[in-house]
Image (cartoon, rainbow, N blue to C red):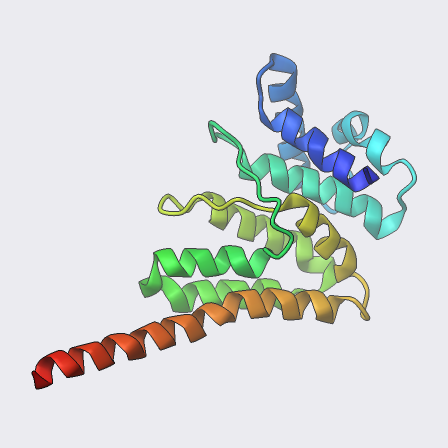
Length: 196
C-alpha cells in the first residue's frame, strides 16, 4: 500500500466522525483551507506522518487534499467515496450538468476556470469547485480522493499538467456528445410518431 493510499484511508477514517477527536480533526483540516497555500500549523500533527518526506508542491498537495476532503464532507452524515480510477473533476462537473442541464453554460464556465487555472491559483479554484459540488442537493457525487491527489500533484509540472487537463476535459465534454446523440434519437422518434 502506498503512502498516498494510507493517507486517503486515514482521511476516510477521520471522515466517519464517530468520535469527538475525529470531528475535531476534520474541523482543523477544514480550517486549513482558509490559510492555504500556507501550511496551517494545526494541521501538522495530523498530516506530518504522511507528508514527512514530501517537499514543496507535493507537501502542499497533502495539505490541500486533506483540507478539501474536510470541506467536502462538512455537515454530511455519511461520507461517500469513489474508487473508480477513471473519474476526475471533469466527471463530477459533468454529473452536475446531467442533473441540471439548464445551468450547463454556467457550470461549463466554472469548469473552464478550474481547467485553465495556473498552478499558483489551483487551490483557489479547487476550493470553489469543491464547495460547488458539495452544495449540489440534486446530486451526491462520490469523489476519488486518491485520483485527485495525483492530479493536483501533477498540476505543477508543465509536462504532466496537459495530460491531467485533457483527462478532465474529456470526462466533462463527452457528456455533450451523449446528450446530443440522445437528443437526435428523441427527434427521430418524434418525427416517426408525427408521420404515423
